[in-house]
Length: 226
Image (cartoon, rainbow, N blue to C red; front, side, top):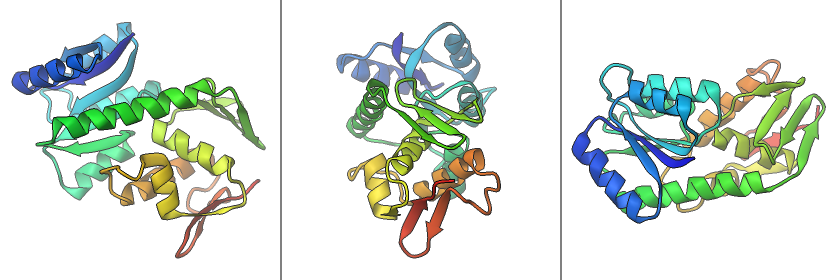
């Protein structure tokens, strides 16, 4: 298993990232195109992907979509595309975080550690959470609806776990955001809304009229048992 897969066509930046993160003790592979990155993933297991958007051929959004269709590897997008629409697109496609270029490499390193820590800690648990036809296997980091496995980002998974652990409780938006992204996160609070919408699309019979994750206007959200 490789700790980090860096998909970045800028050789200089990729080399700087590789050298810095290797000194932090990570094993890694630097792919210089989306196609090379996907080929690497076919033969190797990685813990986290650092993904550029503006790649030759298959761009980062396409790579993100393909990775997420196959599993729950944490993905951090690194991009000079900083418009709100680009960020929403990346998060909607399944990225767990979106870092603007140019970035502080030490901040990026802190984000990597946080994502890996949360992912590892969740996998260390052995509890099964259920609600009717919905089942969460914390040990396998897997979610099943009517016995069928759902593909989720790590943040979607963490959100769902948080909701099932707090059934019937009204949870404030800020509290949810701090629990899942952390108080020191550089992500925007609007990220929560994007992830809630994606989660509803996966577990609600009618996402626009949710019965499980309901909005408590002016406060936050509440998970209702079906």
